Image (cartoon, rainbow, N blue to C red; front, side, top):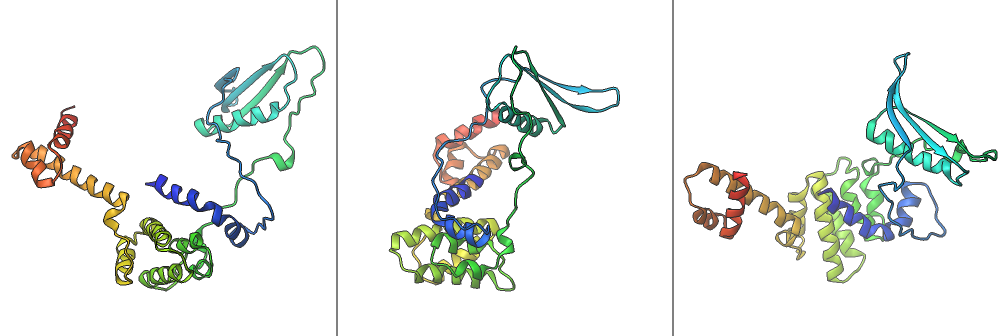
Length: 262
């Protein structure tokens, strides 16, 4: 499910970039360019030596040693990558050493500059912003995020109605409007407001049908599978009868039955 929400945000980030950064991150962007490179999750070169060690003072940490026969430009950043991966995986302190074997004096950078040191990140929560601040926008991608913001003392149904009215009021074709209504319905799940959202969509005469939403369909399929499992465990009904009652193909019931046997 989380990947579905990520998909919405990635799809909308281009339109959200300027209002999001300026209004909520206090960054005013005058120019930008996209980095399309995917961040690698593995490092091709394995560390030369890593061990979890315990000292005579009862100190336990990861000892990481690299051997270098010559200077390597950017060695400091490779060590930084190793540090982050080891710390994340093992949750232990990490002490790192590079043992230089070259003939000429080494000129490798051994310490990060203050601006290069990772000390944490800023955390921003949409719950800290009023829904009015998001509704007061001409950007539909921003408007639908109001469902995740601080609704204050307002009833959720009223906020949802305002979001839908705002989307309708900024002017867009029906296909595009249905796209944002679908996204709003998906985001509403994060606040457990699916029923309220669907009610407002229906009451306001929009044509979006939740039964056409693939996430809804996946949820219905999950419920059907759970029912099939219970019937199979009970053992009083044939596979054909279970398929008939749950309105799924016989082969689907047989597949679940085989998985249960395993």
